[in-house]
Image (cartoon, rainbow, N blue to C red):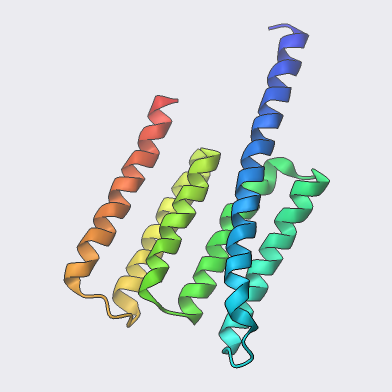
Length: 167
């Protein structure tokens, strides 16, 4: 491999990472905006403000990395781990059946990066959070409702690992 080929490959990988980072940054920006709007009511519980604070810290960190173009290779870890922290805060402070979709959202964000360690982390974290929500929170989930949630989760996890065998 010549020096020119190495430089072209490095440029391609850098541009690919920037595109992926951009997709994740704008996705998290959109989610942060949508989540911020209901928090402006003055009678919101303190837990919602804590959750908003975590989301804004994550967004500010990602904005710094994305626009300053520093630590770009690490943005994926900040995005996925930060999102998992934000989801955990939301699940603990605001128990709801709709939090199951947050776990699927995290898996989709992880798929954008196609990084095996992040995929393993997200799948294990997601399974732990789903078990916690299903059995340790009183969110009105019946046993009949649990089966599809876990079935979809297992299918998505299998598909995520199948992507790595195709690469």
